[in-house]
Image (cartoon, rainbow, N blue to C red; front, side, top):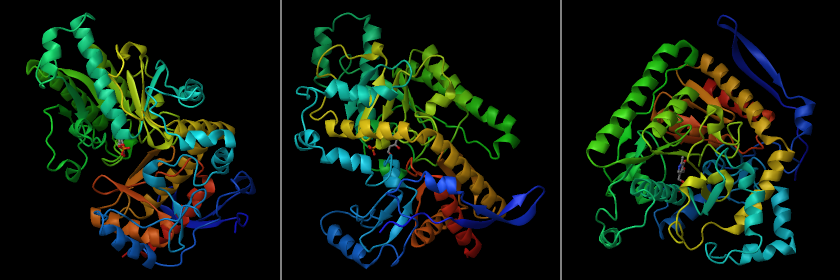
Length: 500
Ligand SMILES: Cc1ncc(COP(=O)(O)O)c(C=O)c1O
């Protein structure tokens, strides 16, 4: 069913020079077509509206068992390949959302399929171990092949977990234990501490806090939720903790026009961070750690400058707080660097970096200094899944072999340039186009328009995601190439031209 890629002729209008509007032809070179993976489809193919009749029927069925209102449509993963997601009604869509940013190298990648067919790997998929106590013989070796091969500079320790929330939750615990140990002066614990921790009292359970940012998203478990401030629906009815929340910069675009204003805005937020640390120390709710996303993703793709993050790191160090960078959405190469925080050029690395999604397994890297001082302190039954490490090791090979970080930079540039062109033409529909690598987004004028644009795009064969209160985000796989960007821009420019 896979036909060779056609040469695509993409026509949309762009602004050249001083507001001169000209039609522009964008042609995909043969070279671009040649490097394409042969398992990808050659374009969207739509048969019904999405969700189609079969999806609707299945939604009704599932809704009888659980609240299934979040479901967009049901999928046929056997037929999904490369950048294309196929649904149960036979619609084939260019997927720019990739399972909430969690598919690294596309659907049904042949290298991963092959891995599963190798007899020596079968037992890893069948026998899921309690990794913390009974790991397989090749566990350390596979961690070296996969996660440790991309460990952020200065972080040589890694712990695997099963999802993003679980990773941050355990990263918080790691920071608290490290902080308490520092405070104690690395001496043994007292009888009082051992007794009081059993009844949720100090000093056994110290009144420590983690400072987070408004608009941040770090997961939905109880501790993570206390650091999450993106949407009310995530937090409603759940008891929480009195932990400090600092404002995150709200940058004005285009960045080059608002250099002074944005610098002032970032300085304001950093000042607030320091004030909160001091205030919470006075309240005896010491800030043991700071958590931050390199780009606030769920909260609306909010960016800050590299300088902001360098200064934030300095503040964390100055006050003795652990610095936790949540790379769960930004990590894995989509920004053009393996970790988005590599752009900051930190002198002193982060203390902890959490990951999940495109990394196939959850977990976190940390400095040796933060190693727990006893067994079972950071622990759960599964501690991840070795079959995911096996897949991840192969994903790493593909990323290197196909130079996918440079691909993300290149395809991202095509995508963002196109979005900026469209923004110039349709400023009433698109504003604040922004991004790093393929991790791009723009704002619609309001939530209703955003929702409508996503729905129209889906019916035209493009899956997009929303974030924040009115942003549309791009989270394609790492095998999203220039011609996929052109294909999307072509479809989307038609949508914008016809939008009523
Ligand atoms: C930055 C960030 N942190 C944490 C999480 C939570 O991960 P999970 O949904 O796997 O628990 C997410 C999920 O979207 C995320 O984007």
